[in-house]
Length: 126
Image 1: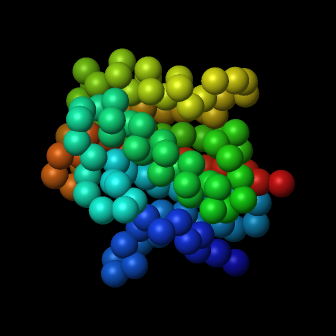
Image 2: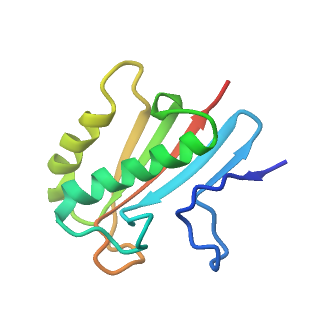
């Protein structure tokens, strides 16, 4: 059975969820969207990466976990030149082993205008 995790971030009018749970597994997706205003965060890759990871943190916390429960992270970047800035921010949040398995993929574009990054993740909860 799949359970929607209410994070308060995904728009309720759209046919999407930003977090779902099936058993001990939680699947999450985050963009650089301010959860209060719904606007895409401005300020470059560092600001957008930070907001994405903070949104992931909100989602996994709503499911009863922390970022330490993430086992897989997939990062989608529009510009490969943004990898260094994204990595610097990523290191702020993921500071101890075991780190989640991670893939970074460069894409042509993301759905929302101005979006530089999108992250998906899988968590395993006790």
